[in-house]
Length: 248
Image (cartoon, rainbow, N blue to C red):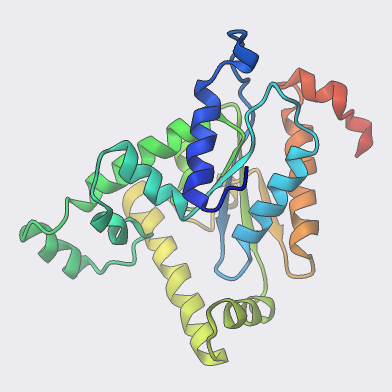
């Protein structure tokens, strides 16, 4: 079956956790959850997709398929909490100005942003507990920080690599790309600071901080994947049989 959209993949992911295995009442086992915090322009979404390919080659049938949650996470939150699609614009990482947000709340145009953050956090926690997922942004590392199956990655890169990526991805000029990077990074920093009282640049919030300046997306994904497997083997013994640690 061809899966056309990211939300369809998310739906199938959820369904895979609710079905019995081969109708034998065997539940899918819990796998790792990887959260990715990123500087703008580091290609987190592309690295995430490469990670899925990496893990799927080692996982067996007792684990649910791997799924990436980024933009489709918003639709998942809306569905979980029975919210209208018109609210999707308010689930971005602190891109709505404080003044506009306050005015809209007073006029009843959308719920309090703290409520939306809370609903998003609840959905992220549920996904992280299921495992075999990659969650990009939205303080996923803070929300799932106490889960034993979670592993947290921070992607950074030099500006010389990030600018061409943003220019190509969004069809921007060089100056526009620089402005875009600054605004996006500031918004994400403010989101963590405002709602979670954390500094996004604090290395202690992550298990791995990876500089992707001289790495391809596939190389970055392989580094993350191998580190995750080495750190998670004691939680997932059936992987150990298929992927001995000396392989690395």
